[in-house]
Amino acid sequence: MDNIKVLLLGKTGEIRSKIEEMFYSVDYIMLTGTVATEQEAMEILSGNMIDVILIDSNIEEDIYDIADRISSEYAEAAIIILEDSLLEENMHKAFLTGVKDILIKPMNPSVLFDSIYKANEQMKKKIVMRRENSAKNSKKPGRGKVITVYSAKGGAGKTFIAANLAVALAKSKNKRVVLVDLDLDYGNAALAFNIIPRFTILDIVDDIRNIDHEFIESYLTLTPSGIWVLPSGAKLMTNEFINMNHIEIILKTLQNAFDYIIVDMPGRTQDMENPAFILADYLFMVVTPEIAAIRNVKASLGILSERNYPKSKIKIILNRAGGNEIRNRDIETTLNYSVYAHVNADSKRVASTMNVGIPFVQKYPHSTLSKNFNYLAKKIVNPS
Image 1 (cartoon, one colour):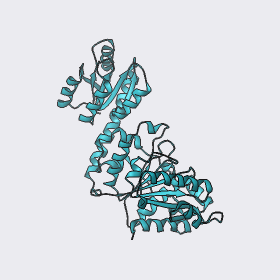
Image 2 (cartoon, helix red, strand yellow):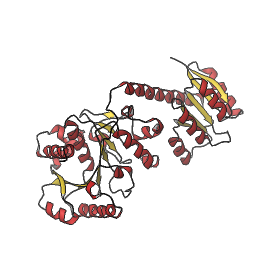
Image 3 (spheres, helix red, strand yellow):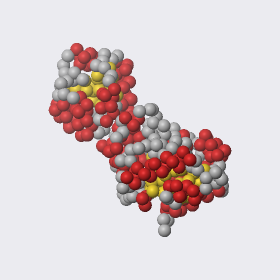
Image 4 (cartoon, helix red, strand yellow):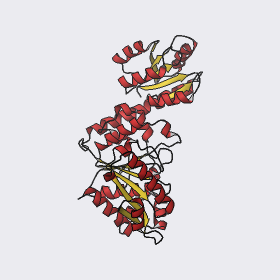
């Protein structure tokens, strides 16, 4: 195994001396240099292959600004911050600047070396995947269509609609389709396909400076259904680390790699400035034949109208259709929109497919409900 080459950026002193001493006890990690300023660090990085950079918080400058500049110039080097205490604001800064880990001083050798090893391994995997992906003959840059699936009320079945529409589109003329889960705190796209993803949207944001259409697939998970999935974060408060600029970059990059980008939005969001709304070719408003659901959708349509959102993009999708309580024409009259497509009710089998992570159109391809999705996919592929 090649030695992991480490550069330490920090003032001379007791902490620096202790860190230098720690490296005497290991063979596979080598401290190649110690510097006291960002300029010195940049000079070493320009002429040497450095795997991991340790930045000690005892220097006078803002260490997160330094980390940001270094990661912009030398994206293949992992950065680890050595802090005196762990503050929430520093965690946020670290995430946005591409820092791989924050260690609290004083740290013991095993913690330091484990962090260095893991950070280096993660960077090596990303580098390999980028190179492999660059060698593939993927879709030439173009402009894939963005279909944003939104519901103004929780429990309307937007993830079910998004997942099954994605599969139906992928089967239609072998289109390349990706499902993006933007329900950042409670997203279920991964569960809908019973996949354990290697990466989530957080990983893309962590490497956002280097993202392009040639290797974005390395962050996606290919499902047995033939579509790609970009899951939401695996922990709460993911949205604290992801801003609108990140979402815009991700969606525009995916447009250059896929024919269709299906975006599963969180329920009841009021942030109509989200790029998922702005970039959408179709905004699918999912409604169920219930008074509360219809009322909420009507309110959302009012907000969109106030903000001059193009009415032509908005498509009403009626989920769980077929009941006798509220008729389709009553929904259309109330919303002042015609129903673009409907998906029949089949509550028992729908629940079972979501529980086992097999898309309905895949498990029951000849059912009426699956035909609903196939018809919807055809309307999108051939809008005329």
